[in-house]
Image (cartoon, rainbow, N blue to C red; front, top):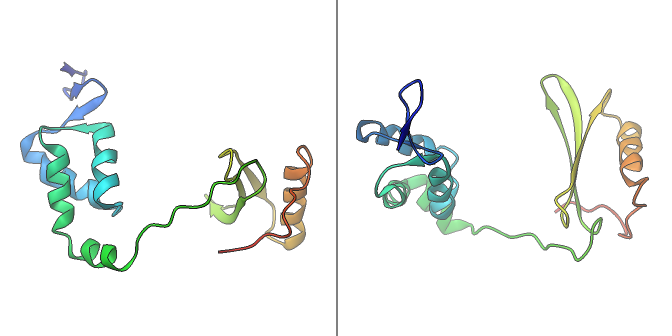
Length: 146
């Protein structure tokens, strides 16, 4: 165990959570509702207390919203293509007032972020053409949305 200059206790790289703060941390870990498997794993990456995984699972198992949602839907895993540019994810969004286009290759996890002066079809096509200019246009019939 180590203590930093602010008095925070660490076990290796994880912050040790005192007993009186655990209930608050459990709520924080669960705010994203990532499920009974991911939440303990994500919590253990940055926090530590004894029996933490079991306490997180118990907390989630008592959440009515999670129990109802889990019963209705199971997580779908995407098909990973054999080679790059076989399957892409493309999305538009606004970040701190700037229009952006992100393009992600499912095979390599390579991503590229472009800032758009306007979100017109011609600007988007221009960015995608620039993305494909080095490796070439992918040999897929069209972009599809699922």
